Length: 302
Ligand code: HEM
Ligand SMILES: [Ca+2]
Ligand SMILES: [Ca+2]
Image 1 (cartoon, rainbow, N blue to C red):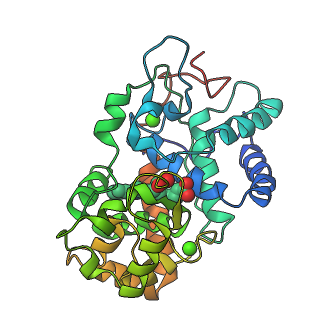
Image 2 (spheres, rainbow, N blue to C red):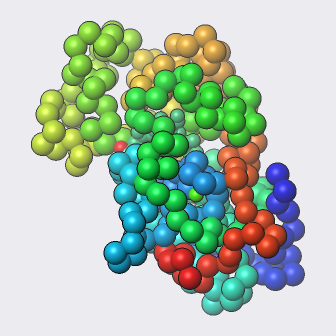
């Protein structure tokens, strides 16, 4: 993409260290936050590009921002980016965009949990306006997305099918709320339970009982090592232990199954494909040069 590997060389050479050191301390206190920051990056880049639009809080009396979209259910830890931003501002005032800090934070989420340390081109600018929740509704994939939807989304970002399967390896971290898998567990005749490993199906139904009462509060781990960035996501999906529909379907679809199988036995190849996919995702629709702004406060258009 049109970004640079030396962008802050003069204006803030220490920015990557500030982000790393700041998050290292935060991740120790809250080990669930790396997953949140990695998903936050995807949801920012998917709506109007990687421009920190998802960080903008709804203003008083203004139209609802993208965070009002139900597709952003479960998005958490947006405030962490503002905390890291204030650490950066203390050393390099008005130099570094919130959009770059968000990508660097997602990079640390991967690196500090055992994944690859990805080299990231920088120079993104922040959006001067917020997208509507309708746009977010239209662009973010639903929890029921299948393989064709998934390949279509990432092909638009220049990813190969192998890279698309690799970027979904982000589901090696974090959780899924029960509300996102109710239909997999309890809709009769949808055939999904048949492809699920029976013990795993039983476990999910116990953890996520039928009905809406707790389904927005209860959750399951995306893989058994949900604090570690490893290839267990693929190992489990290949065994019929995929949590979301997309996780289960990729293990069976002939367009994706061989990549799932390969990443389940070769973590190095997963890390390599994930790294190139991550850079492509991080370049989607970026603002550069004189476009956009450098926000002082990531949560407000200022
Ligand atoms: C078609 C593509 C995708 C679909 C349908 C999808 C869907 C979902 C859903 C429904 C959840 C559960 C949210 C919750 O219940 O709180 C989730 C969690 C997550 N997703 Fe995805 N996702 C996709 C792609 C991605 C990508 C590309 C990334 C990152 C690069 C990503 C990273 C994550 C992470 C880290 C979590 C755990 C979040 C947490 O613990 O708070 N996903 N995803
Ligand atoms: Ca955005
Ligand atoms: Ca894992």
